Every structure is written in C-alpha cells, then in structure tokens.
Length: 136
Length: 114
Image (cartoon, rainbow over all chains, first blue to last red; front, side):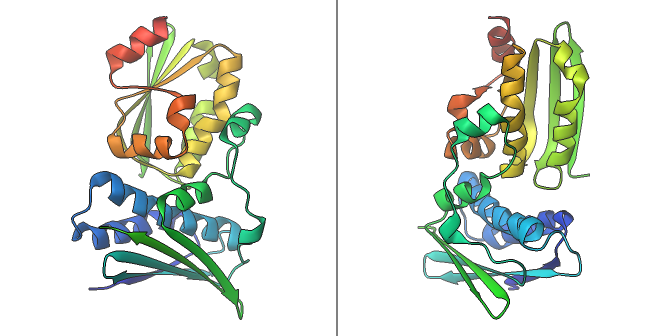
C-alpha cells in the first residue's frame, strides 16, 4: 500500500492530502471522531508549511509519509521552506483572539492537543515534522 | 467546489447553510460571506452545519474573528445541526463554551428569540 504523497505548495492541495490520509486510515477501523482528529492534525501542519514556510510557492513541494509501528501511527512531513521555531511557540488565548478578532494562530494548538507527540527537526535546508498518535 | 454557502432570510434572521469542507483554502469564502455588510441588518445569524463535513483552524478562525463584532452589534450567532466530529473540533479548543451550538433548527430559533 502506498504510504506517501508529494504535493506542490498550493492550498488547493490540502484536500488531496486529507483524502490520502483518510484512505490510509479507513482500513484501521477508527471512530469517526478519532479519524477526523488525525486528518485535521496532518492538515494543520501541511497548511502551515504551505502557507507560512513556503509562501504558497507552487514550485516548492511537501512530502507526507505515514508509518504504522505497532499501535502507533507516525506521520512524517518534509519540506524545504522556513523552519518552524517550536521554542518561540506560545499557546493561544482563544478569548483574547475573540476580543481582538484574530483570524489565525490556533492550528498548532489543535495539533498539540490531538497528537501524542509532535517534533520539529531542521537541518541542511530540510525540515521534518513528526506526529505520533497511539490508536489503541 | 469544496464549499458551498447559501443564504435564506426569515424576517430578522439570516440562515447560512454550509455545505462541504472548511479548510485553509475554502475558508476565504466564508470570511467574505461574514464580512458582507448586508449581514449586519439581521439580529440573528443561524449557521446550518448539517452538511459541514470538515473544519480546520482556518474555518474556526473565521468565526473567532467575527464573533466579537457580531456581539458588539447585538447579533446572535448560533450553530445548529453540527456533526459530532465537527463539534469535537470546537470542543478541543473550548470554543463550544464560547459560542452557541445547539442540536436543531427549532432550538436555534427558540434561543434566537430569547
């Protein structure tokens, strides 16, 4: 079974990425809610990479690979854009976002709350994001 | 077409029906819809989520960014018919406590009239 997909950095490619993850997860007999959460976490990372790290430049690519290790799913997302600085990340205050009418900045919070482990690694102009989710 | 948005007017209520998936790409459409000055003429905005099959932070962000403006104008924003998996995404961020989400159209209309 094909476990990886590569797309160019266009927001239009988020849907094919979600479809790819959904198709992979379909055989694992997960609940609707869990399946949606996992698809969402991958979508959020890919959206950030496409929009922020690669400025929606369609000449650039991101690659997603899914690995299953016993009862844990591992998602590996690779790009060559601007590295995400995890150390500078601050959890959003949603009530403050509402007060000031802020549109963005809650995606990584969703990923952190859904996934069991989230890692960002950078080197040699390559960035790797690893997401781990235990499914049993 | 990833997202279809339709409007229906009932007296002082506008019902916005979302059909499809709200992601970083399609949420721009929703933002344009909610930014339309025409919407501010109504005292209640009901959002029918029956066929909203997916929402990402970009979609949530659109609602987050307009909520205070509607509240300041005393316009009620009420979601109804939301699928469990979509409601779960609101819950992960605690948005179910900051926004009004009810199960049915009738309930939405009752709350809207309060």
